[in-house]
Image 1 (cartoon, rainbow, N blue to C red):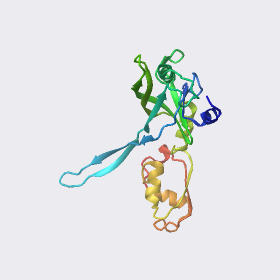
Image 2 (tube, rainbow, N blue to C red):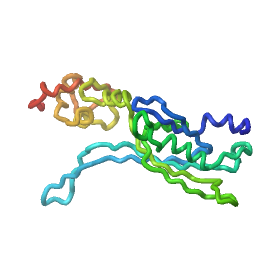
Image 3 (tube, helix red, strand yellow):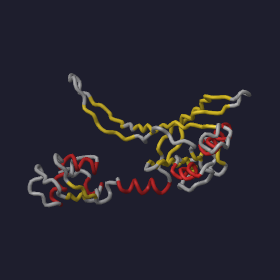
Image 4 (cartoon, rainbow, N blue to C red):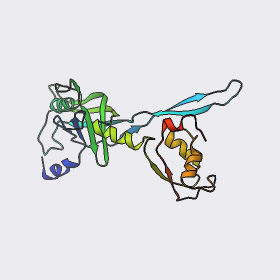
Length: 233
């Protein structure tokens, strides 16, 4: 491999097998060519409610599903990107499978993965991969292929607990008012219900909660389910 290609390797896309705590447990797969695109999909679940005799329906947020993303990787065995050194396509595909789909003895399942390319960093699991062989030598051996792989985001170990803590209504939250913000809606976003907006207004000593001043910081105290049960206003 020439000096220029070797210098670029640390910046190539990496797929690193990790365990449930995020610790690397296998040999990472390093892409020979970086993908031209990464397609990221986000799905939100909403439930609709339609009152009999009406034409419209209301939508209530249920949950946000884990992100999914797909990418294409080019595998080349002609030596075009390795200074003439021909690395068999079959060997490169084996390295990809070792990192992504092979059963790991320690955890008795395929590894969780960490995919990193530039500022894109995602812990995930692989859903599927398709290897398409596109060129062959005179003996019928593949010399070029494309791997199309899809992944689902998965937060591992302690990181999941940390992220969950920051979204918990049992903690104090601080939000800065943006133009158009309404206190009942801000309260709903914190507690998943707007019943406590008057208590929030009282805590923050708001004289007119219907006209929030842009840039003002609003404190949302911890939600006490026992204390607030049956008390809506």
